[in-house]
Image 1 (cartoon, rainbow, N blue to C red):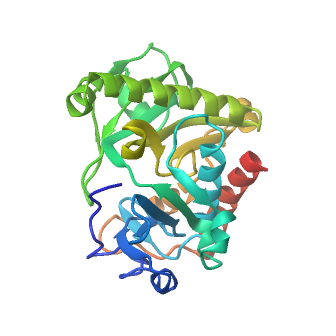
Image 2: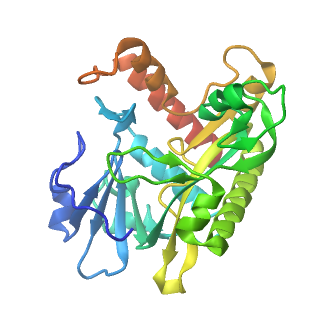
Amino acid sequence: MTGLPTSDDPRPGAHADGDPRLLELGWKHVYSGKVRELYVKDDEPGRVLVVASDRVSAFDHVLEPAIPGKGAMLTQLSMWWFRRLGVPHHLVAAHPALGEHLPEGIAERAMHVHELDMLPIEAVVRGYLVGSGWAEYRESQTVCGLPLPAGLSEGDQLPEPIYTPAFKAPLGEHDENITFERTVELVGADRAEELRARSLDIYRTASEIVSQHGLILADTKFEFGLDPEDGGDLTLADEVLTSDSSRYWDAEVYAAGGERRLESFDKQIVRDWLAANWDKTGTPPALPDDIVERTAARYRELADRITG
């Protein structure tokens, strides 16, 4: 997480100069993303405070109003997974430990993490044929250039999970799907192989865990960095296996088939409503109360089912 831009043009709903409650505690606001805010402290070198907001985005726009409790639920899921995956991660501390040092309402949404040298790769793993992968398959029988068997339908499980990396574009630009060979050019052959192997291993582990909760992990994306304090070890970072980074389905509903088969536990409700009610020009309309409430309920159900 080095080299982050200062938030000269913060996202809608972000604090232009950071949350005043954190500023009073000596935290310096260094970045606003679509969802997360980053802070550092002079007396804590090599550490970053990551605070997840309740903001929701779709079609490259941050929408109004926010989804109540979303930031806390994303943080809850990431914390739960970091502690169970058995791989190096960036978490130093989180709620409730942070509750002793941060104001109520922030501690639940915050993670204290190691500062990493982030790799410019979004490590995407797909276990099922859906989304942009399905669109490409219909045209070329490939997903991100990888050939797949003929005769697959939308939502089908792939013969094996596949790794389809993307290049993380600068702020405000779109990420770009890239080949594994391009990953080698960006980070070197050994690191590219490690990224692929680590991502597939985490996906398989997580898929087995959520299957015990009646869920299917259709696809997900990971981010990794190098920890200078640990000799440059590959370290899992950002959020992990949350509703914003992963597509989950209900296994029983999926098996039953029908129109609800591919309903996911994320902001798909928001995307669908916006696609039907906005022509993607100008400012997006405000989300109706029932869309906000239904979206919050889907985030909450997933967090509850996984973490108990």
